Length: 186
Image (tube, rainbow, N blue to C red; front, side, top):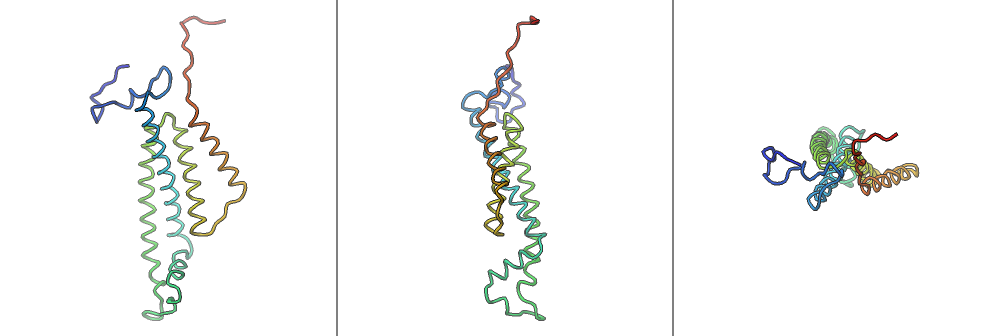
């Protein structure tokens, strides 16, 4: 297979010569590293997606930040500042703005990593499902730790089936269809 190396940035191996179209598999150790990079990009993309959702819930949610502020201040929330307001009455506004900017930052980095995962993945389905599973699990962990949310049994069955599908996708290597010798079969 001829590869135009002038388009390669590193001057080394291009991504196109790591993939063997006749067998539809990645070649050797370099191909294995490419799949490992794809997996890392997918997992990080899913975690950043969950962090973006978490930031949106904090910045747009009712009074989560004010409640967090009051619980972290302990008994000191009764100390009034100017005009009868407490520290938490005004502190939640910059915290909401910070969470809003974190939302946009996490989304931008998440899409960048997901694009890299798609570039390094043998199939787009593998990258998409891995990122989605990482997002679901990260969201469940963040929801449980910060908001005390619980997931129903149906949710856990669904995530279990998603993970089973992931095992099938990551363990499955597509095989090329056998090439005929030009003769038609009847």
